[in-house]
Image 1 (cartoon, helix red, strand yellow):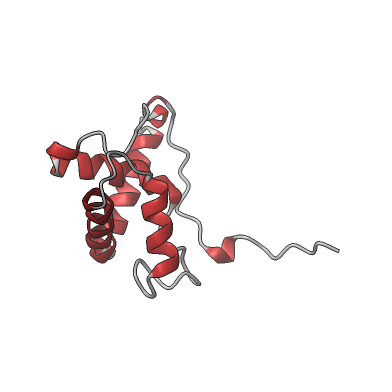
Image 2: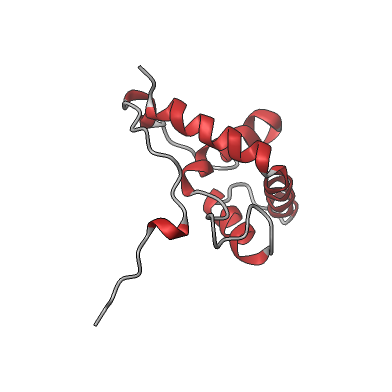
Length: 119
């Protein structure tokens, strides 16, 4: 049996190999916050800056999402592992996906959400 955690881990690894520039920007933006004196910061804030401030990093944002929300925990933990002196900079929780069964879902893209008529 594969867990949901293992499934997401495979997805984030595939994404990372396809878009190594995202990791470089993640590290750059994180160290920018550290240099500004932050002792803790939000991984969400780093992700949103990558999403909204950088054109073409992580994909086009049209045919695929630029960066999936499920990747946040993995990027934060990778940063802690690679830069041990900053372990805990991002606050993390237990990944409950380790106890859940895989669901077999691929990453969704913008085309997977039909337009909603709000009238």
